[in-house]
Amino acid sequence: MTRPLRDKRGSSRVELRFLQFVLRWSHSRRVDGVWLGCFDKETSQRALDRAESALQLIARYDKLSYSRVSWDLERIWVNFLPGI
Image (cartoon, rainbow, N blue to C red; front, top):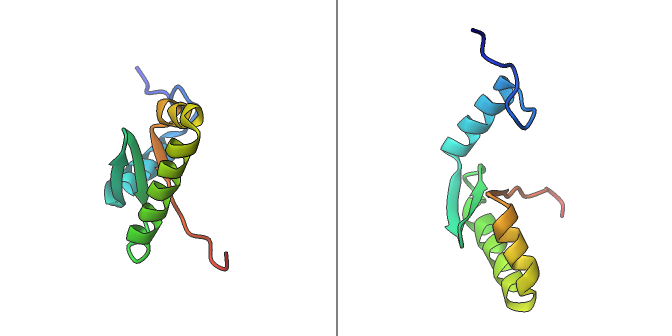
């Protein structure tokens, strides 16, 4: 019996292995059950703080949207874009 080349979401095995590697070596924290992660070691603390602050802002002013975000998302991946 052969293993399928894609999972139920359509991702290939290579993509899944890469995702497992990145998730294992990233810096992360959980906020209300949502995983926040950042791979860049130098900016991870600042990036995760900003993402957590953004989630708290949504939770404070738009509870319906926040409940949808926390229900629908397992993970939020945070990356800084240079020059922005």
